[in-house]
Length: 199
Image (cartoon, rainbow, N blue to C red):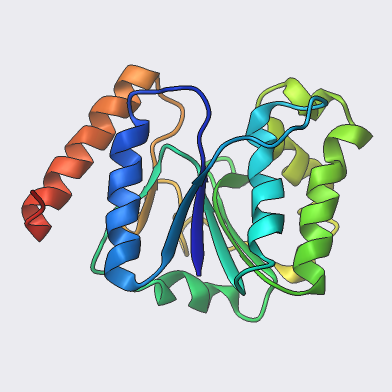
């Protein structure tokens, strides 16, 4: 499995989440990559994570994409915690509090259906310019144009079954200011450091 995160700009919490996720990947034998945005002038840079996943699926069977404000909160938990939720599907994505898919953490398995899902998602801003630059960007594109069309190939458990926003395994520090995210992630890093004896 490759764990990938997209970063652009220079936000103060980037080094914190990067360290946390890199340490998890090292502990569990996963490859961790940080990528910058791809050249795509017709959309916001955050859409790059879809293109990054398409590229990385050429190298590995499984790719987990995390937003730069999402972290592995439990470093003892195996990656199997996620893969078993795939249940043979091409993609796993969690819900947010509204019941919509949250694109801050998602897992894809290489295969024709995965490439179809990701290509349809990447095409969404060309189909609907409103999702290219208007928040919530790729999340809106996914919920409007991908989730329903490919529902039979996407594992989309209810929040009570798998929480990829504020859960015990992956925690997505979303909908907060940069300062609030930085403080929350610094606290998480300090707690994990104490638990696991980090320097």
